[in-house]
Image (cartoon, rainbow, N blue to C red; front, side):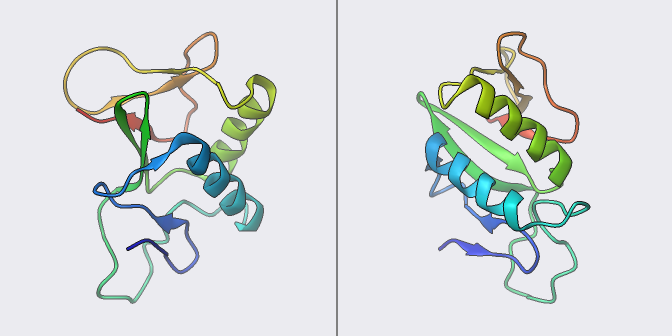
Length: 122
């Protein structure tokens, strides 16, 4: 079950990852509604049933799984959306090879965006 946390983005669990284009829609909607200092997940919720992990939004893309970290900031999401607008839906995601969760970089230079916590999961 997916749901929006109070003041944050809708939680998408690992067992139900969404396609990248749906992630982009979700991110755009959250960014349009969020305040400047907001992060993806508002940790101040009183909901005892709320998920408290940092892997907030799970995405499936090209046979891989990625997740957006709960501490991703509104300004960083805006920078990613600017790159997305420039590069289009086929924006390149780069993650170094290896095991463990690896930070993802974007676009032709493959640089990560500070504050935009997208990770490729093992």
